[in-house]
Image 1 (cartoon, helix red, strand yellow):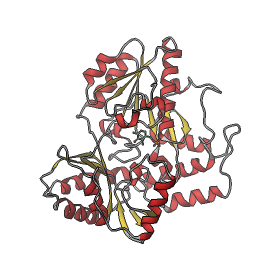
Image 2: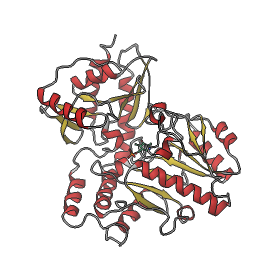
Image 3: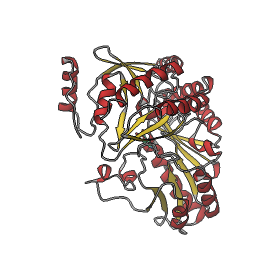
Length: 409
Ligand SMILES: *Cc1c(COP(=O)(O)O)cnc(C)c1O
């Protein structure tokens, strides 16, 4: 990775040094230190304003400090924050009902992080295969895709194909089969009598906004139904209106058997995740078989309820669809020979540069011009602003991107 020398304030330098000295180096951030957020904007410690075009990987779909979510959070923080699941709390039921209504599923199981939602789905599928299909416990197989991103636990990285995420972390969990993404025939061929589920992202976000061919989701649905295996969509990043519909699976009118949810479910304020599923699938969980101390805490519940309400009240699915198409159309008019492809759905866009191009310097340059975005896989920049962005702000951001991209040699 190349590092362009950029003048930083002494304050910025000092704060970065604190991180570097006392923190594990498991991230490589852009050299900017943020201290405030409001709507689609972030501010650094020197008061410089930026467009947030990452939205914490889609965790901030509702924008920074959304007043409604903030109020819900503050009111609840003063009332009751955590009881554990040893007792009922008065907010969990309404949250579960709201989430089931929003997603169209029968039941939900609340956790905190996306990785925990995925772990929950893995356990659920294996149990379902054992209890409902009679597969001997220990023989269950789950199919996943190349270039997947489902989180960072040791089980999840066991079926990652990203060597950076795996190296040195063995031994790995077994029972996973990897197939190419966007390949229904490979899915069909990989299914055995022991297969319990196909876990996949309807659009691969971390892989660089890999959008599958039209009809892929429908084909997956049919193959899973025919083989009686669970179709599990990881919508942690693509869900909650990011891709121009409530969920990316809605783009093809497809309903999976379960979804993993997280990120924007917490309204950009706290980690809230969940698995939603059909009743006959979720019913495999019994007392003591799974849980989380913080999962379903009343503070998380009220924040998530407000986060879901904002998505509906502000028509963010329709907005994401319309502004996303507009953004990609305008972006495709930018003159930059090294930019080879623009892809995405809704307000999730990948700008793909030619192979070998290091987009780090471009992201630093975008930052200098007041827009924060991050490269993935070296040559792809993901653009994912908060969905509350206005058309005028999109135009302003496009002007910044145009300035920077047209300077690329
Ligand atoms: C971010 C992400 C996760 C993991 O979520 P964490 O909250 O970081 O654990 C899982 N799946 C997908 C598709 C994601 O984008």
